[in-house]
Image (cartoon, rainbow, N blue to C red; front, side):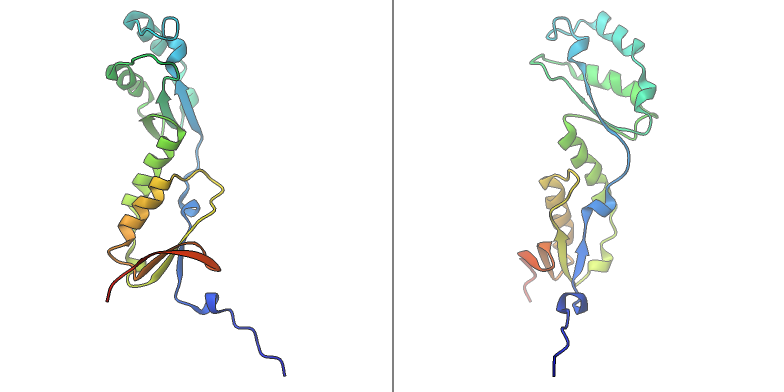
Length: 169
């Protein structure tokens, strides 16, 4: 007589969080201002302001935008702030930095607004192996939010997890 195979993972109280489920749609665009600089190194205010005025900002509609300068130029803070005044109301989010910093900032907002009450006193698995770019900082922020409420926190897949946290009794 054959025994029925019981899927203990399916029958367990484990709760899985997949950050990709929260990944917001929208283009991620890097705006590199090096070409707006004299010899890609010196910001001349008059010319820089002209580039800002002439630039087609509508192309960033509903996008997530990272402002950067890939040359070794020293960029004054007001330059990025000036650009952001043109993107305000057009882009979904604007940061100074690279795409990874942009993704981290996007997810910081998501995690800050995440209702974690359903994870109270439960064993939680934070799904790994994401196909989208999710920073390690994002996972750290999520664990920080879950630690006060979850019974246990693991990382990976239900069949192969790495224990991260277990509340002391």
